[in-house]
Image (cartoon, rainbow over all chains, first blue to last red; front, side, top):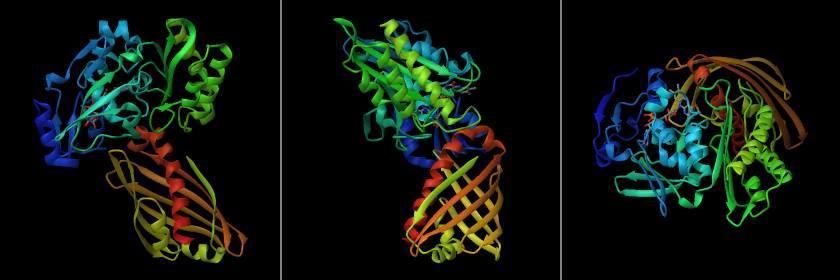
Length: 287
Length: 147
Ligand SMILES: Cc1cc2nc3c(=O)[nH]c(=O)nc-3n(C[C@H](O)[C@H](O)[C@H](O)COP(=O)(O)OP(=O)(O)OC[C@H]3O[C@@H](n4cnc5c(N)ncnc54)[C@H](O)[C@@H]3O)c2cc1C
């Protein structure tokens, strides 16, 4: 590992200023669960490390009935998993967290770091996308809000500018529904080979009518992918077994998997098909 | 991993053939190629850069032409190492030329690439997805350069 200069930042402003000053030579350090591994193996060699774990203002989970859920970027995976309000209002998030790596990783890893890292196999990204989340990016000239749909650009690439921090995740209250996250991995603590997050909102007057749905697939493309065709098939319709099967089939077509050590492209499409079908049924059962 | 591509270039087969054997031209068509240096009439050294997000790797590659059938086939083998010792890379490529008409040629290639070392352990899934993109970019660059 290369030598680097270490700055413990105490405020968001201080971190932004350091980022502006050192540009591409600098890296933010959250829980270090992705970055430190990459540094140890010499994949990245920043000259300046800006440690933001000490910015306590960014570690919070707040829920409000009109505004929805706000999560500070430095909140750990473990805090999400064990939060009472999340378990009650957005249970899919807690359920997903219980499948993410191991408890020690969840104790250190932050939600901001997970999204900023933009690994196509992230568990958090598809789940938050299924909830229609948006993120706040803060730079030297202030903050901007970006829909998560526009945040992921490519493998390991996001809409973050070099002098910006991800500071907050917002899940609108309108996304309160019932969701389910399926992760298919070789071993429980491994990264997903395929994952599917479904969030379903039923009509309050007709429990068989789908008012809104989001179907998001992880690990089967450079970024998490929504199956808009699958969503459109169900939106505004009475949910039937045939429609669920059709939505799962088009989702498998929309996936962009690559053949690798974990399986062929065809095999992964087949898994998408199965997981989407099951996730919709599980979500409907919880609604 | 295998990268395959087949595409048509609006160029006569002899012109396409000469171009792909010209280090300057082939260098400008290979995505991320920073330098091509002929060693003799059958071998080239090159430096190829690949970037995925925040990770940038540079390979120093030696490519040797093993077989040529005029205006039909070029077969090469190559190997190289990542310049910060992140991995080692080997390739075998067949390029087939098929004259469709006087000014149109179908080009197809199959490249069998293997990567070992830290890069392979870390990023098999990512390298494979990226390789497919690189294959498409090469096809686009050849067309742009020659049409
Ligand atoms: C053994 C192991 C298994 C894992 N398994 C899984 C898994 O199954 N599923 C999964 O989703 N993840 C998994 N991970 C990844 C883990 O979830 C993430 O590494 C973690 O959430 C990243 O957060 P961090 O705070 O540790 O980020 P860091 O490692 O500190 O940073 C990651 C990247 O994000 C940048 N960054 C950090 N915070 C911010 C911010 N606020 N704003 C802008 N940029 C920022 C850093 O500069 C760096 O580029 C695993 C990790 C390990 C070590």
